[in-house]
Image 1 (cartoon, rainbow, N blue to C red):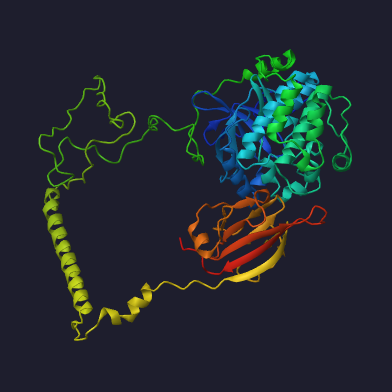
Image 2: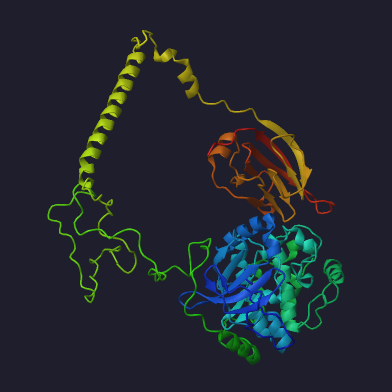
Length: 598
């Protein structure tokens, strides 16, 4: 999920481009060394961690950052992407999804994209294509395992490293679908590598990525897209209605590519089957990735990209902390004070005056002043937080209050002690009176006003202790919720158009149920788990969305709205394949104002 491919300027792209006037010099403490490229989502820069590890930082375009729905989905995808830790993916190591301009950082991969390699050096040999596809399949296995559908798998999102391919940019297309910019001149996704259901606006599943994998394999083996080139509309029409042109695909790859490019998603192979097909095409031998798995000209490009510009030695302090715990600029020692700086608090004396600070333990001896030339004392063995004067300008004693010149300071200790004793006596006396008074009332004894009150007759307190009665459920049967529509539980539960906004449950065209309101969430109950008001109140496996491909007839989803309502959604059916619209048939039970209070 990063994007490290450079812009192509003919057949010899400039890999490390100098920063231009409109490029930032730092991103949250990362000093930028060069620009790697730019695309529809933003620009990609080269930087380094404090330990010298190169990283690629993608800065999202300001137009996308201004869209609140994009930010929400982008934050979800970054959180999911940080769980993806595969051998053939570039891990996300840092990000900021809430700043003025969102960004994310991944490990830098010193290798060309598949698209750049094919344009510059032609199609890959069969053995390299098999290793390429097998590595991509492993990458999809961990991506899909994190609940992510790539949606934009294409040659420019596959980097060729010395030890195998790296799949990048997973999840960004999903976030981009949330913004209206995708319909106003900004294109996310490449038509030539879309699946038929994606081109037709239908449900996107992991099988969508398998279709794209077949297209990438055909491109790597022939140097041309399987459905040709031309206008977006023409390519998309051929993807949906025509068969691919596989005349240049080697025989050993024909079965693999043909099965991946099946129009019906259910007919495509799984990730494990793709790896099995690669194994079969490799003469039933174990796939082994040698150091020289790529042609020599492509390997030479890797060498060039490995010679990245040297990092700047002294990175500046960040203007704001990154959104995750890791920070490349956390100092190990305090910075040098600016000229003219002077501390406003005087240093503590060797022996604090009487009455200030904690009591001195018997036998305690304050530290003696150390000569400036003497070495610093070593910390005690086994003490993980020993005092280090070069790290924190603290003092072994609490800083005392300044002593007034008239000597009145030392007498404040006894005065404070007397005042504290008086306050304590008042509190104890009041507490004792309250206890005895309550005991007297509970036994029917008269109070100070001569009234006798029995605790059983204290109707005000008993009413406060009574639990609030559960609201009655409202049932709505057989609701057909169409993709792109939503439900609002606080009023008439009827599908209304719109999938993004202050609603309470929507069926997103991306193929998932979404909790829209601020503070709202969903819980997917286990198969066989009986949904009820008590179950929905008790279960805390919260999520913001539930993909429809994880649902089956009878599965139930608890809905908690930000407006205080609870709902139980029971799936009763799905729209048939020949239906002109995509919808879910649901039974919905609503308990209004029943959500547990935080």
